Image (cartoon, rainbow over the protein chains, first blue to last red):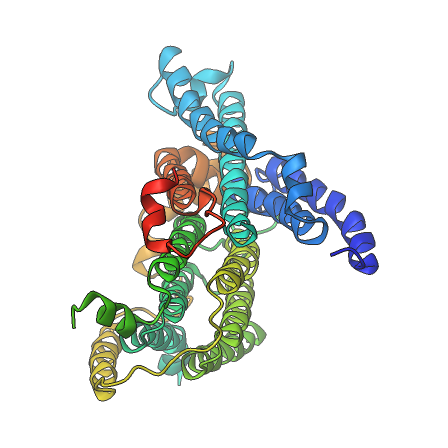
Length: 139
Length: 118
Length: 191
């Protein structure tokens, strides 16, 4: 793990681009192909690449386990919470129209929020998978 | 000829489905069984997407100048199914790891022998 | 026409890959072939106008799935599949052939590939295609259906993903003890 100079340089170059791409896919999913599911997987792929090249301990310094566990639940809560908020505002569960002043602006905000929830949960769960499997071999 | 080309997708899907099914029921290695299940799963994805395709259609993203779009509903169903599929695959693999730790093997017949169930 | 040609070629590749996967006994090679299988599937999805699905399959199937399988292989330290002994090898083959023949018989009723008048395209799909822009203001119909029309469905899927994450954590998350000579007893000890 210590002498892979080319791997390290290429990984340092690639990881920011992968993360940028993940955010692009996340927030541009309304207009082009993409969305929370894909963005979450791509984001986790960037961190998995980091863990593969620089070691598991270094990756856990960036994103500790407790944070992953929290994020996985938080994404789902955000999704379900949007539904509760729409109910509070007088709509049905997950009826985004009531979130904004017009139907379309409310839908836009609702879709953005739930896609964010999906992305956070998927990214966190994929990283939990990787850390669980990889951490098992270390101990 | 038109009938063959029009149904080639479905036949390959069925072939893949059966290859996956055969792997699951005929092989004892648990990792290979999971790969077989994934092949089966992949064939179902292909079936849905084959159904959603429309001749001379395009990707279902609205744009000026395009009239015919492929059916977006199967895309949604399969999109979520793929992510759920990897989640269940990971769960299966985790079970395989625990079985290996408990029994020292991932061959089905050896596990049965240790349990005296066969 | 060129679409159909690519389609048929990729499907044939896919079938060959699947057969190779069954016949191999080296687990590492099988998993690598599975990665190729996923990538070919993703290519097919592009040809069949399903960009979002292809995107997901390429990232998930060829990336995360293959990586998880390799991680499993590293953990179980078994690289060769053993041929099962004392089984009747013809029985699964008969079951598979009969099931496959029944399914092929069923396909004679399905309308041709790409037929615009097929039943799936004539009920709810036209509504999504015509109304999604007015209803949600989102040009990508897949996102509109996924997040808005079928938001409840997607909530369930996210819950499944979350549950699988919790289950994997319960199975593998706890550290194994250094001394694993008493592997059978460890379940009661670690939490």
